[in-house]
Image 1: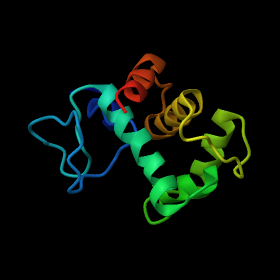
Image 2: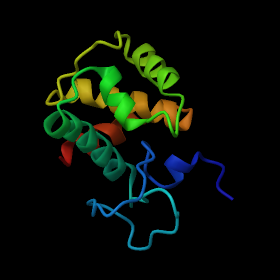
Image 3: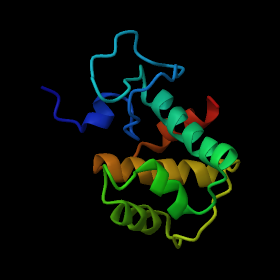
Length: 134
């Protein structure tokens, strides 16, 4: 049995729950009943970053606290601890408004989310490849 965290085994570092979304880079066979499985980490990071950008564009969420509150709702997570973790990792306050079109900002945010979800540092090359697929 692979002892990697589930999100990394699934190449889904943000642990995006399964839905009717047809993400690019999905494995042909989805064997995890709860979370999407991607063919490579870059596709999981692409989906993570794309989702955060959608939160801004569609739902008008601005601050890091607002974005994480939607990403990690209180019915599934200790959302306040999640926000603190991401803010600490990025060295910004929870009122920080990330530039969703900036590669460095969004890759840092995706890496911080992945770190919280999986307990290990993200491979930045994979995160940046995900950005490149947008």
